[in-house]
Length: 291
Image (tube, rainbow, N blue to C red; front, side, top):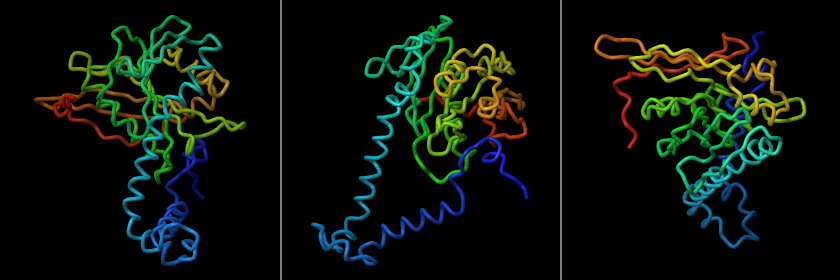
């Protein structure tokens, strides 16, 4: 009997199982047919079964928008609560909340003196095109706080937030150092229940025709990652087993294709290099400007 390395080895929760899909279908069918299957529910309600059925679609759309808005508004506060405030309290970093002032959420300095900037996204990071990065940033991090329970496998939940950041980095000429993906619904947890974030480590620079194959960053130079894990799970050694299982190296190379270039991408796990994320190469000439 084969095992699933994503759940058995790395400790993720798979939200794309057949059992969960069936449960979701059952819930959706119940909502859709509630007025017919259980008209007695409406006996003490101010609406009739007919009112319910007539307004159901608009009510669901409206409620969905409210829930998505609440998630997005809470992401930055969550990152402050679980990471920035505790890390500042123990002297690992200092930071400034830039929301409402500059077009990036947080900037500051690590205890090593290195200036960092960080923007927080949820879902697929739709607003990444609006990000402006301080000129003296040495370590740019994009944090994805995943709080939706959409029906996707662990690999799918990681992939959907990585690809947009890569394209943005090329479009803007910005070298993203690292992504943090914290996923309470589906991410792995420590024995005492703390969510283990995944990090995606990018090369020292995004490749260009002048520098087509930049080396990957060395974990020993990622003080930000040490502070992150020390704060969130109480372990700062990046060679620790739990951390290695949630460290992903994202290799980027430019390959000539005759008249142009192709961005070749490989994403693999630090603990087990055979566990990889499927990713498509990018035609360099088709990377358009963000408007």
